[in-house]
Image (cartoon, rainbow, N blue to C red; front, side, top):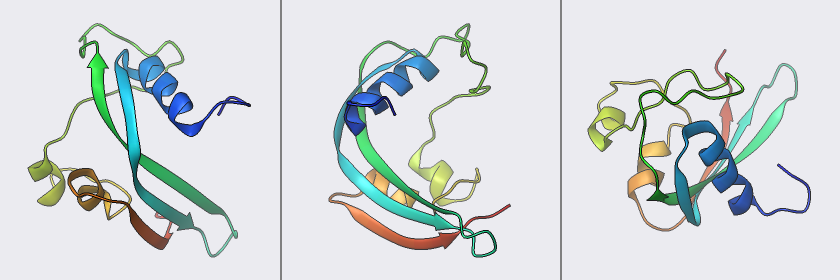
Amino acid sequence: MEPGTSLPTNLAREVHEETGLRVTVGTPALINEFHDPVSGFHQVDIFFRCSISAGAINASWRDPEGVVTQRRFFSRADLEIGRIRFKPDSLPAAAWGTGILYDPLEVIIR
C-alpha cells in the first residue's frame, strides 16, 4: 500500500508491476480473514473483481523484484476439481459468483 492511495489504485499498480497487465478494478468480491492461533497473527484480505484492460501475458516478462516466479490464468475447473492448491477456500465462489462474500476466520496453513 502506498500512503494516500485507495485499495483499487494500489491493486491496479501491483498487478501491472507483477504481471505487466493493466486491469480495471471492480467491486469487492470477498473479505477473508486468516489467523494463527499460536502466534496471534491475524490478516484480513480483500479480493476485488478485475478485468484486463490492456496488455497480454508475455512469456519473456520477468518481475523486476523477483517476487513473482510463475504466473498463469486458472480456469474454474482448475479451482473446483483441485488441480491446484489455493487459499482462501472460498476463492472459486468469489471469482465466479456475484455480490460480496465474507469468509470468517480461517486457520493459516504452514
